Length: 200
Ligand SMILES: [Fe+2]
Ligand SMILES: [Fe+2]
Image (cartoon, rainbow, N blue to C red; front, side, top):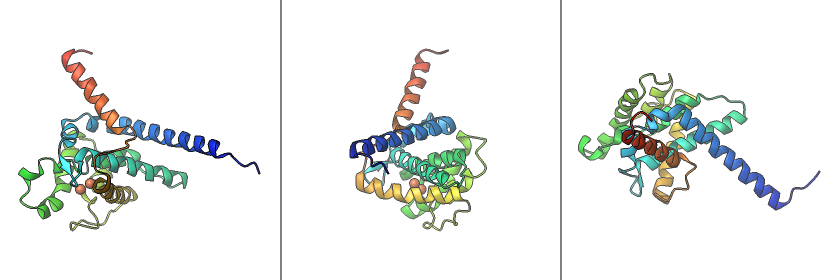
């Protein structure tokens, strides 16, 4: 058996990471474009979340982790509904925007924001993928009195949400992102450009 040198191993690892980033970026662009270019997503990057992060960065982490889990499952021949996961992860906490004005207490916020997020999702994407409403509604499981996720996709997003929340607290806003923010910024830049130069 031919042994690989450490350098070639590192090269292969880098290549694999790059491919994963590209795949995440493509899936987000393809299935989440309307959400990514929304005013809600822009505002999400301006609202603090989990003490040291922002709602936008948290959403970014959840979306990336959810897709990474789906890709691993795919390698095991377990198929997941990627459009549903993208829409669900991108919208799962958008209802939390304006938290201080909307909710009287933290407990109320925990319990109500999934349904408020679903309302935002329906407004941004009237034809939501079939599994997305439950993904959003049940993402707080096992906390906040949430019902148990009823699909593999809902489990994936709920799991990614917990992992992302821990990372928000630990790493704060120092994200090593994989292109999501870049995607949001590019879309926002293009929208601003179109505003100045209508018709483009
Ligand atoms: Fe949440
Ligand atoms: Fe969340």
